[in-house]
Image 1 (tube, rainbow, N blue to C red):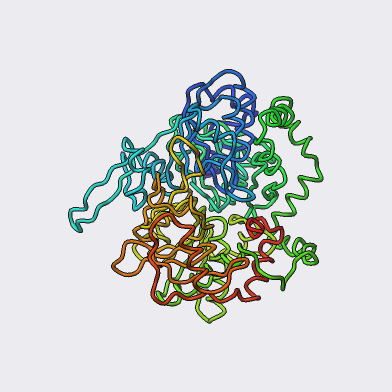
Image 2 (image 1 turned 135 degrees about the vertical axis):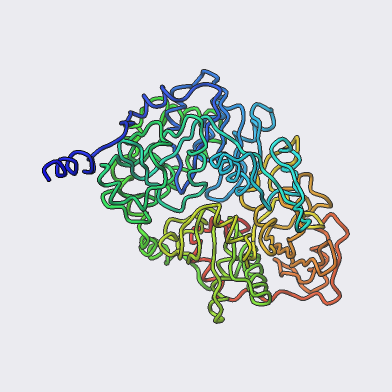
Length: 593
């Protein structure tokens, strides 16, 4: 019996710590693991590995390391890598400024025009599937996305179509991509690298599990293995995939970190919108950006960076991550919100798109709405509100992992932290875009914006070759390719409504409705081009004939006009008031004032 007790104590007892100790300082980890010429996968959950990127910039500034950066989205402060000449190639679904409104970034525009950086464009889902395939040890994975787009042509080495022998359907196939090293920021990890990444999970852990040299992980806090065991249901990334782990509080700043699952002793924090806008402003002037990089990156280490932020700002961002913090923010904004004022062009557009989406959901019985950033997103929020008010349920989804959420006032950003606690489920890109939006039992209408659209519904949000780069697909191509049908909401101008787009980001086959600042356009059954079916009042316009003429004059093709063109009713005052509560700073609603 004594021998048995010895075995229990010696061999069966759970050790307090086990496995190799992978804790390192951020400086040492970058110096040891990051090498020139590497393909670096920068993982995006709801946060970004910004402190790691900053340290890479310090380590390689002025040394021409020619990195290949792969990430769902390339923007925010990462433009410093392009400005400093550290990057030769970017693979992403979005390349630009995402906040406060999505748009091109001057630094990236310059690199595109001069050809100093190669841009490789994917959709959110097709990008994610490439790294999932590599993690699975498979050469390819199938997808509904990017077939028929210019992305398919430009990425011919990594994408092809094949035919399903049973159904005869054409299926897209994306080639696996294996990075050298994954950079990722989590909430907590033990010394062996077992890491908690709290949802929404974005592109998840596929890049980390695919990388040849594993993952360089930064976390808010190093915890004990006993803590990890008690919270093992929250661990997403096992330590065997982690090469080094660094404790870096506020390591995602200026993006945030969600603690949606309430991990004790660790604090989440919200995106620092003011900081992001400072970077965006600095990007417009190379000298101003030089000064910003010297001040915030090159002249300080991570501890100095946090000291510059200051404790009050950090405390504010922690408080803002609370799900109820919107109440105080909107209370402060209420005196400046004009609830009953005359709607402007942006509000008329969003209300018309919201009304049309509501009708589509009601008529076709869709159960979910997935929208992109901007006017389309606000229209989706209106449609969900009004559909539910009519006694029918519909779930809102957002691409990085929000399902069944309720938009909170005070912040119109699609990935607003205060929306996280309202979700019925938090997941990742694969499950939202690959299953819930476009899977075998999907029942989804999509809504997104466009820089350009042509008569057959093909959308361009990527580039005018040789001239300008917009931002890329984001999730738009996935929505256009995978949802049951889609609506596009956009500003109407002649150079936006073109005969044929020069780059097809999203094929138009499932884009059935277009709502602009001037009208509602439908692709009717059996027809392959839009017909103007309703017009929207503008400033100083009077009469149906005048409104139709305005729509025709701001379109470069010979526009089809319905025999019974309607005038869209004025916006419902309740809808206008709701929009102004969602966007009190008029980040989107003020664009057309």
